[in-house]
Image (cartoon, rainbow, N blue to C red):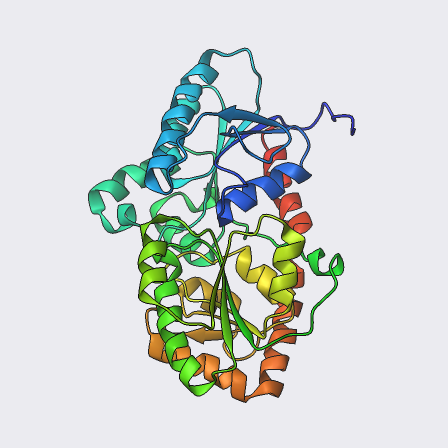
Length: 359
């Protein structure tokens, strides 16, 4: 066991973590695993080694998040008077930003914004007024999206805003035996309206007619009303619901056997880390043409961008990759090069530098 460096800033991260699915959950786990003196205030069944586990309800979606919000809020008041010593409190999760003004009384506050646009509080001027004031109370705000960074700089002191994207485990494919890619199209992510899965399923209806030998494999937890609606609406012998794969080697073995990966998100900063992990496989990736995407990737060079919410355009982009094998291979290899710039090791070093400002 590594001896802790007493000169290191003592940090408490707040947010949900794996085995729960999601980009912010993975982000917290990966960063906290790589930086010394970091404790995570999270749910009881978290995979994080150094944690304070709080009780939450097991219901999917909003109820689960609200139960964690209540537990974290109560613990925040305890922190104001506790003998526990931290230099920095690092808050994740949109609902938890309300804790910043409370914890600011005693601690330096960092907030990571995992995506603003598309969420209801941003569209509602009343809610946005309070939200941005919670952010203003932070000593530093990290945005995982360039688009969100630009928006936040208009609303908050620009000197507080730092762009640090999510990362990827670029070495994962070195640890598994790569499969020969099959006639498989894969989706990896939460089964949620935000991810736009219904448009991929609709597009696959057309793909199945034109290319009946292809299969669509869905990697994501089979639960909730949205999943039930989709699974009952789309019946296709070439559609495979794999569910949530907790073993990463098994998951990445499945990804490596795919001919392409599709991320048809309706809104979000970037569907990382799933998208970057897909790019790291060397397989071509199709993603929604969102502002965050256009700032990082070049369409038809290292990724293929499709119109959000259009199953017709999505089907056309999938068909193009099927028909143009050499171009698909080139896009996949270029995407793999891009993914090398976003290793979790490099991202954690950038966040660690911010922590050290407050030690």
